[in-house]
Length: 191
Image (cartoon, rainbow, N blue to C red; front, side, top):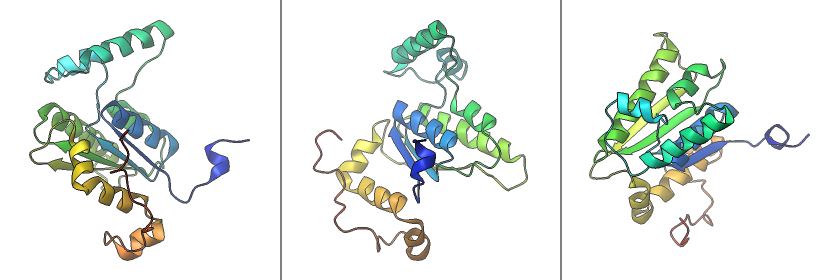
């Protein structure tokens, strides 16, 4: 067979922004990735759940309404990231690295829900299998990944997250051991 199991990468990292951040976290948990890096992810995808949390209106709300209709028509359930954490099998050791802009209070509130779900999963044992780290970026909003790209911060983050485990463990965030030919995405008009 093909697929992920046949590939056996040294390190598996998923990454995305906004709804792609939701997908990165869901896929990261499902695949048992080493890390899932999510920028401004939707944690709650049900419009009713978002309303119940009194989240501020967002430009993507109508898209979530459409997603819910499509899921209902197919008999599917679009689980929140809170549900994904709660329902993940034992032994998943994924690090959820969540980045949110402080100028997007809804994103901050959702990220805090995800942090709480991870804490609840640990059950007070202090031994979390799924881990979650949240970084709040001052002066940034829902589109913080674009700002990070433009300032070079995204390149640094990618180098850190994608470094081979031996390099990351032995050399920290110094950037040493990162392939110098990796130039990031500054020149990519699609990113």
